[in-house]
Length: 282
Image (cartoon, rainbow, N blue to C red; front, side, top):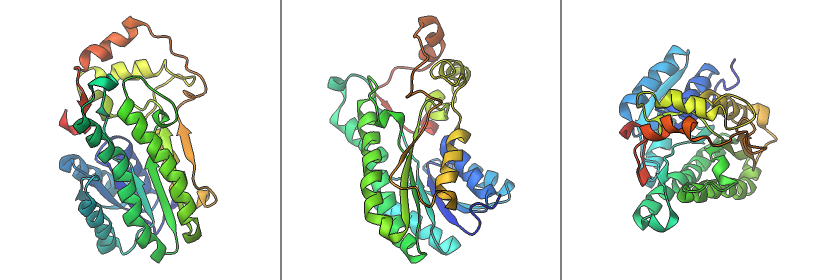
């Protein structure tokens, strides 16, 4: 308890999934949290969850691809809580999916705007406020897709690889300011962006993911929230420029052998699409 006492955190994409779990954990550890998302209903519910966990939290609607909205988000943290110590650039979408030759330039650009530009903007506008308080922690959600390839996820893989290397270059620039810059590379995490609250898909994904890596269960948002807490806290004061892999051992060696019958429930429930947006849009 109290590992983040007195600290103020901004978390994007915090209305559901990894962001929401992290907001609740941060609040329970003493942080004041600004929850940012396009999903107003989910964001306000996340605020209530944080308060029920004995924390302080407010909600700010924000599109992470829009610079003015990121500036306003950071300003909200200062106006509400007086400082900024942590930003977790977590907001994400599936983005453009499918064969590379069929991806439209528009869908490619929308993918990069959220997944990579949003991280850049979060870093850019958090750093000046962190300098004022003598340092801080910048965390971003990358992915194992940023360190290896996945067929049909070209835009996502490219953007997440960008997050990994932006983390490294930014860590060099801001180390002198005592601002640590790290990212987290989740493996298969069963979040609403995958099952999109469709009946039966969450359970099907849970079973499928349990077969995908050496640790025989699906990843959950709380698994990533635990790593985010470590990176946000003073426990990681000598850690910067790192891509922290949290994947149940997936990148060490896959345990999965594709069996059509095992995949069918999830695959059939997920309608084919060329662009996957925010989970709350269905």
